[in-house]
Image (cartoon, rainbow, N blue to C red; front, side, top):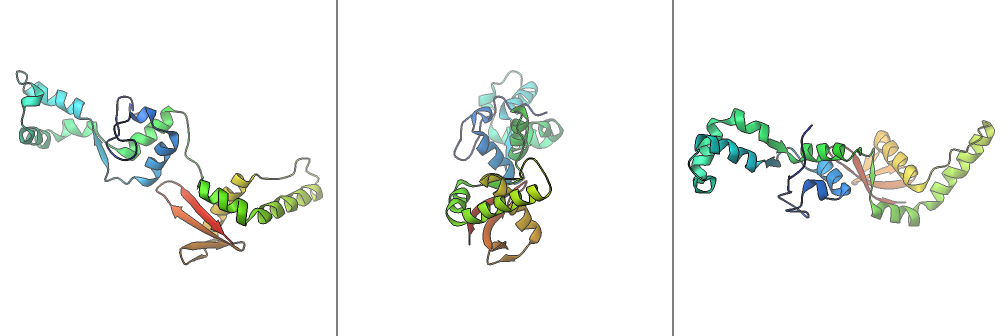
Length: 190
């Protein structure tokens, strides 16, 4: 497992903050949104390796072009110290004992769902209660709004009725972004 301690972000909203201190939502965003072109190079470790070849020269006085040449000729030593940010974020998520969601529901989508499709959600729960009674189940299959939105997002993606940048499903229009790891429901309309 990659050690995520002492690694500071070098981009974005949390630039300069230790990876172990950024909010969980940002860690998940990094996994879902950052592609493999964004890398982190552990400069301290690489400087230690360079220092072994120049033991009597302070690392700050070694010229950048000499460092670059050294890195180019010693790639086998350098590569273990270069990571993709998405992999570092995944290691940090694992360190925190969390997992990725099946679907991320934005706050905006929850707000719009509560204004636009609350009746559909209530109808779903009423129907679930009736079905549960008919099947003699003791517990009805009711779902909270968040769980219901997660389910309909996944179902809409499977149904795949995509028109005008929206998924059309059960009389609703869902704006869903497909991330690297999980989809994000951005908003919902009727």
